[in-house]
Length: 131
Image (cartoon, rainbow, N blue to C red):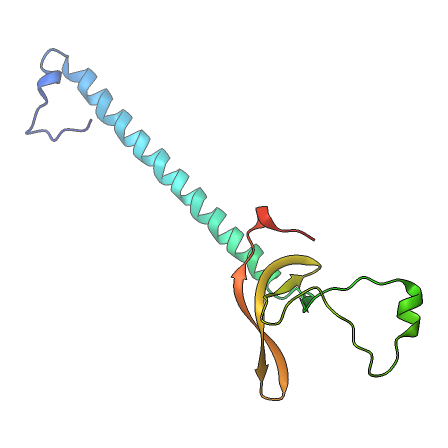
């Protein structure tokens, strides 16, 4: 504990002056070490931010799955123009959104001008992901 020259600590009354000076020096050393540690933290944060910046330009494959269906090859070969494949989802049920074949979210189909889009309604936490 560092104490100004004109102040004194009651615990220091029984100690010689030299010992009190050592305590002050020790406190200054701890402060310098903690500043050095904080500087290391700052450089680590800057390095992490730079690493993350490099990741932002990596392309990923995003897939929105309306539903799935299972059929035999013979059924598949019989499909022709106008055939309807029944999916496992109900109308209005959330669709799955995959990034690089990993389920990351669920959403709803929307129309954006003359195209289809997906509004994310739920982000899937990593511990609940499947696929």
